[in-house]
Amino acid sequence: MRLSRLFKRVPRLVPSVERMDKETAAENAPYTIATLYPSMVECAAEAARVARGVAATRLAEPTHCPGWDVRAMVNHWVLYTSHGLEHRALRKPLPDELTGRDFTSDPGWAAAYAAQLDRAVAAWSDPVVWEGEVDLGMGTMPAGELASMIVKELAVHGWDVAAATGQDYRISEPAARIVLDVVVTHGDLYRQYNGFAAPVPVPADAPVFERALALSGRDPRTPASFALAAPTRSRPLGAAPPDPACRPSGLVLKRRTG
Image 1 (cartoon, rainbow, N blue to C red):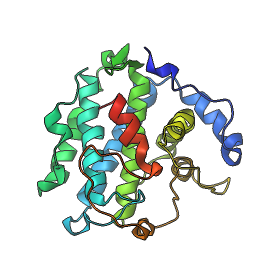
Image 2 (cartoon, rainbow, N blue to C red; image 1 turned 180 degrees about the vertical axis):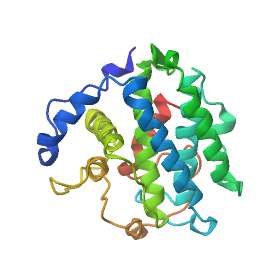
Image 3 (cartoon, rainbow, N blue to C red; image 1 turned 90 degrees about the vertical axis):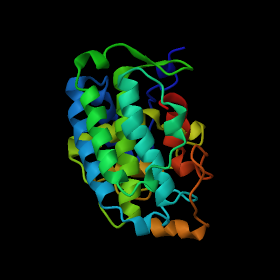
C-alpha cells in the first residue's frame, strides 16, 4: 500500500489562510534534493542551535503540548528528526534500543544531537536517496515526501522546545513555506487521527512560519507556560500524548517514520 495516497492534497483549506496558502502548496511539491535539501540543512542547523540553549534546569518545564514537558519533547524530537531521518535515508528501521532511550539523561545530549543531525543530513545529500519509495512497514511513501514531513518535525518541534525554554526558532521564509506546505497538505489527515488540534486564528498577514504553527494547532503568540493549566510530567517514551496538539509526530511519524 502506498501511504502517500492517504496524504492527499485537499482542495479546501482553513478560510483565513486559503487565499495565500493554496499557491504555496502547489508550488512546493513534489519535493526533490534541489527543492527541499537546503531547507533540511537550515532547519537541522537551527534545531541544533536551540538544543544547545536548553538548560538542564528547564527539562521539567511545560511545552505547548499539554502533558508533555521539555524532556519528553526533546526525546521525541531527537529520536525522529536525527536518528529517524538518517535511518530513513539508509532504508533501515529504528532499533528498539533507540526508541526507548532517554537522550536527555546524557549531559552532552545537545552536542550528540547536533552530531547525529550532521550524519542524518549528510545521508540525504546523495541524490540516489531521494529516488523511489521508502518502505515503512505498513506501506511505502515517496522519499521526498517523507523527508518533507521530517523537516516539518524539525521546525515545529524545534519551535515547541524553543518556546518552552525562552528561545526563538528562526528559519528563512523559503524554509517556512515548506513547513506550511506540509501542514496544509497533510493537515486534514493529522486532524482525522487527532494529530493536530483545531487551527488557531492568526492575522492574514502573519509571518509564514506563524501561519504554519497556527494551522498545526499551536498559538505562536502564547507562551508555553499556558500548559501549566494541566499537570505536566515526563511521559514514558513511546506513549501517545493526551492532547491532540502534539500527536502529528507522536502518532503519524511514529507509525510511518519510526
